[in-house]
Amino acid sequence: MTSTTPLGLPTFRPDTYGHARMPRNAGQREPHRVDKVAYGRFRNVYLYITEACQLRCEHCYMGERLERALKMTPQQIVDTLTTWRQLGGDKLTILGGEPTLHPWYIDAIRAARTIGYSHVITTTNAQAIARKKFAQLTPEDFAYVQVSMDGGSAATHDTVRGEGTFDQAMQTSAELCERGFDTRIICTVNKANEGDVLRLLDIADDIGASLVKFHVFSTIGTGHGNADMAMNPLEWVNFCARLELVAPEYKSRVWFQPTYARRDQMDRYAGEGYQGCIGRTLDRISIFPDGRCYVCSYLFDTDTYYAKMHDGQVLLNRDSEINEFDLFTKPLVGSACGGCKESACMGGCPAEELVMGASSCSAYPDIVPVCRLWKSSAKPE
Image (cartoon, rainbow, N blue to C red):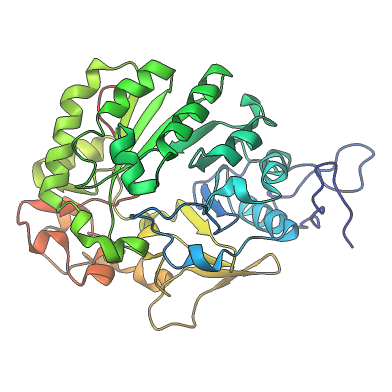
């Protein structure tokens, strides 16, 4: 039987096992929060509370999901948060679609803290509806807020995201910084905006954003129809090299996702903590409104998912011939591409093999794949 919490969300049933047990406060019948789980599996939880979005960006990995616009019910949100907290989740990112379009967005943010996530993050396109929702929240509600910006000017950003979206995102970002939110900028780099994305570093310093993160355009989701926007592995490696040259000039921290690297860079990344394919550690999980759970975002528009949520339970995917559980065991015993650079790439990228049909190193002999879910710093921390 469920009741209603002060947050407006149904309460969850208490679990009855082990160290993830949710302790009761004195005088409370229902559990208050979940004890911290001291291991890394599924530590990073990415909760897609809605697939709806008011924009149609040319690079969006959500693809057809934007048109069906499914959203999680309040009970689904709480059940999902609770289950993955018990499985080790501690750092939560709430996103979409555009998560602030969800009618229970504010409640979901606050429920996450109640359930016991120590870091609650959100990613937003920072348009007018987002600004209204953030006005009802405080810096204490988040570890940080990520604003998606796809160019250092209206000319490039609006080409990707729609007319007027740059000015809206700038206004929201500046207001968040002024109010004391840890505000960060995240940018998808492609051939259309490569020329001015580094201007985001100036913008971050001007408004007080703490960090700018760059990642490469991937031809998944909507990107399938815009393959001409994609940078090849060598172009991305060269962009990252330019980024590292200019980053020390700025106050804000600068991160990037290597995705590809020269073989002689791999010792450096290993020294920074790189462990190869995320499937080795299962450090993250992404959950969608239809219940599908993916380890790797590169597989979001495939049926190769890890598991499916049903009534708060995690059911391993065994329905399809290829699934993430089986796929990610391969780099544990050999390289994903079967080849020569296993010692350099730590097993390669099995998702790249599946999506693209070949490893990037097959076309670029000195380039090896780096898990696109891992990030490096463009300047000393």
